[in-house]
Length: 245
Image (tube, rainbow, N blue to C red):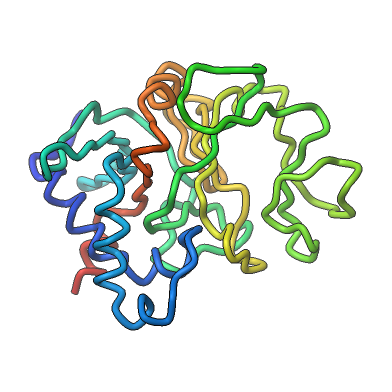
């Protein structure tokens, strides 16, 4: 069953404008005082620099909900769908309302976030993006009391008691993209290790990441280009529309 998505491109652009406060809070780019006073100018400038966007959102109809990912590209000043909708899964408890994501809540954060780093198990992969190989001693810290919370570190370099192994036995991180949520600055307790990675299956949700099939993430990795300053927009359609009010 597919839900009608006739207005997806219009929604994508309006969502960009809707999530100004979240983008300002969690973007990996530092902003000046002048930018903070004029967020519309700042967001327009930043999104004008981007020509690639991944849109991950839920669509609900009665008791049916599906998560989809779209790849959008701006050409000649207009956003167009390059491919999608792609079947996807998100957090087991859905998308957190803007600004309300917390560690361990099983929700995917809503907002606009840069995509800057890809990772995986092979020494090299087919992508133009910066890439880091995940090794057996690589960890991503989710211990809210650790000084290196929400950071990728080596096992011998941390005292954290809770973490994600970046090279998993289940291959979920065989290919992945770091979603730059709560990475600069890092706010303890606001959520960690938010990735775009391979799913366990079409009907198996995540602990807060967005996941797609292996074939589809390979397709996305081949498409992404750092010169396009790619972004990801994530959130529940209903809550995003309410945020526009």
